[in-house]
Image (cartoon, rainbow, N blue to C red):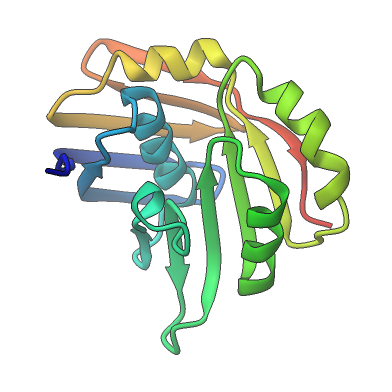
Length: 180
């Protein structure tokens, strides 16, 4: 019998001073049985960094044809494709062919090894941006994971503060590759 996803609820308050985006989102997050709290919280962070009314969670680990997050226009065309982790170059290039913009959020202590192996093969993708979340920050985010969360996210000058009550985590995303 297959294991079922664990459902998490997050009330996410976003104050993004860099984009002038101030909203509250009630998120329902299905955590795949093979997914860690760390990866799930990086998905929440990715949502906060790209938040809009049309951004939605995809099937991610459950379906390789869908990203972790995506945003579609009214015609169904994919405007934004967001992957979390260290996808292989074929998956990245396939996403770049399907979406206007592709973002990859890498988050482990071996991200530099992954990028050294993958970077040269995806360098030509003009609609790709790769961001590394430092391992210390991603591990601190994992500690915030609870089945029901009240999260506040403040983004200013490229720095992100994400947390619940007194437990705040400073995240300084590092852009490895930017859009051309």
